[in-house]
Amino acid sequence: MKHTRFAALAVAALGGAVALAGCGSDPTPAAGSKGAEPTKSGSCPSGTLNAEGSSAQKNAIEQAIADYQTKCPDVTVNYNPTGSGAGIKQFNAGQVDFAGSDSALKTEPKDGVVETDAAKKRCQNNAAWNLPMAVGPIAIAYNVQGVGNLVLDGPTAAKIFDGTIKTWNDPAIARLNKGAKLPSSKIVVFYRSDESGTTENFTKYLQASSGGAWKAEPSKSWEGTGSGKNKSAGVAAGVKATPNSITYVEWSYARDNKLAMASIDTGSGPVKLTGESAGKAVAAAKPDGQGNDLRLKLDYATKAKGAYPIVLVTYEIVCSKGLDASKAGLVKGFLTDYSSEQTQTGLADLGYAPLPDKVRTKVEAAVKAIR
Image (tube, rainbow, N blue to C red; front, side, top):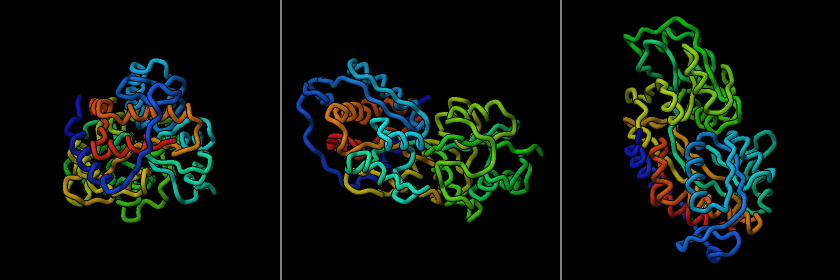
């Protein structure tokens, strides 16, 4: 199944948002030098690159790795999709060369740690950059027999996921789904048991859209109700196998598991998760970084007509400086290829939004500026 319409809309929306952020570039290493990224002449680095983090980008980055290693067979790229939180911790501990995260590095303390400060220390007192690489919506996926078009809004979703609403025929759900045959069965909630940027983005939506119903602060760690499952594949499999269940999961996982997905009413009527509706929400994103730090601020409480509000951006977290020359060259080589027009265009077939040219050129410039 192709998602080219989503790709085109998200491309245009994200491009407009990031176009306001500036970035610079440095000359790349000479072709053929140790650690040089691929050039038009076809030279490649050699060695092993290790990365970890976001499971939301698993399918995208695995395809990018396969394509890159075909072009550059002397490079081995290992990516471990353990979740955004684990990836950032491993990056900050110096155990991996870059991290994938569905949320940008935190600038405020969490459990006594400021992620940007820890990353700067890991990068030998140089800034770490957040480079957007893949965009995708988060589905509220469910398994309820006979309910094919479930509608939820922010307050109702928050009350389901915090355990306040316990059965499918609760009046709040019934009010949004007039005429639907809702069972009296208990709602089974599945959540990500690992630290996850998907969890953080979803709880940002719950906080922003619920009118105060969601009490917990957005976090990579789940603070609602339910049963934990490991990574995106775990929650998707849990819902697929369990009647009367519900979860939050990336669109590609919901699609691949053939799960029903709720429409979201933001105040302008129910909105189904489609490429067009997700693209409208991405249009509300604003630049939130400086220079080559290309982080974005998403509007989870958007009321734009026809906009599906629950989306995420997967970033690659990289050292601007501080890696040894060979590792820096490997990071530059792979991320240059991952952000290339050819690779990004292919992501649409996997349910991701490719980077628009305006964003892609800024990401490419930032990658080239790594030293």
